Amino acid sequence: MTVERHLILVHTDGYQDVRDFQEIARKVGELAPDIEVFIASNDIKSSVTRRHAGKRPTLIFSPGNLLEFRPLRGKLYAGVAIPKLEQIKRFAAAGLPVPASVEITPDIVLPEATFGSHVVVKPGYEEASHGDGMTLMRREAVRFQPREAYPQGHPGRRGPMYAQRFVDTGPYVHNDRVHTLFGAPLIAFKTSAREARASLEAPDGVLAAVAVKARRIDGPIERELIFDADVLDLARRTYSALPEIALQGVDIVREAGSGQLFVLEANPGGNTWIFSKGDLTQRIKNDLGVERLTDQFDAFTTAAKVLIERTRAEAE
Image (cartoon, rainbow, N blue to C red; front, top):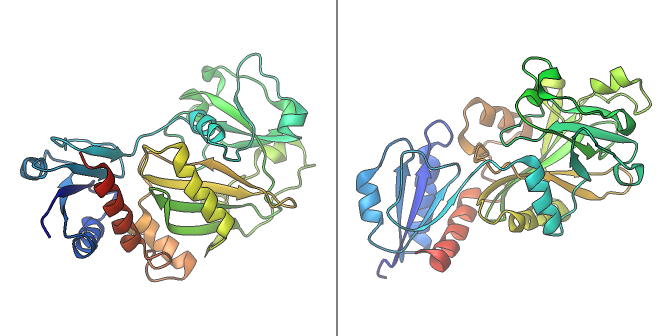
């Protein structure tokens, strides 16, 4: 079969192992001889790759922003940081279930009917991550603070803070993460705290210290692969809200009692290719008790198939 289109996979050193992309390229070659795959380094201009790839209609996939590499032509999918509140607005516009959220401004009012008894105060700027700066508090205690009023090093000094209705996942805090490519799940797992959080009736000072996200830094955690159909379906639908972001790490929580799911964020900046991130990958493998993170949904074959589909439909 004659080559008709090109696919460029853009590798960024330190964020993805180039061998991952080489394996995906091999699978694309086996499944779609009409597509020639190029792997470009994001850290250099990759001039030879750029020149050869530009000879046919092309699709470019980069987990994160393009750096030095600039293609001559093609439909580009690259990660980009998106403010948390903008993500939430786009989720809601797409009909996805999201907790009520609002930026904390001097005139903030949080109706109990909308926000419930407790909220989580979070940083809202683009690159806020890892749960830093998140505080559980009673709804009526939320107050605006100017940036300079926050302690040194607090995320509130870098950008706006917002209040989000607290989704109670139960006494043992847990959250689901589904990594998707064009909405197709690559891996999905639950992270749970092994120590119970304080009661919601605790004093304000105790609540402020509660970890609302299961993180190793806050205490022992455990992880397990998940196959919940409703969680995977919500992760697939989340892609439709941010269709320009091919690679997403979708954070989902399930409310205790009601069982209702809520999507929190999609981590669109591109730092979610977890299959080859050194110590992080090894820790997750150890937590899950698996040898390869790719096995759950045959991640690299899944990636090859969706990239073939997109290249055939959108290369330009």
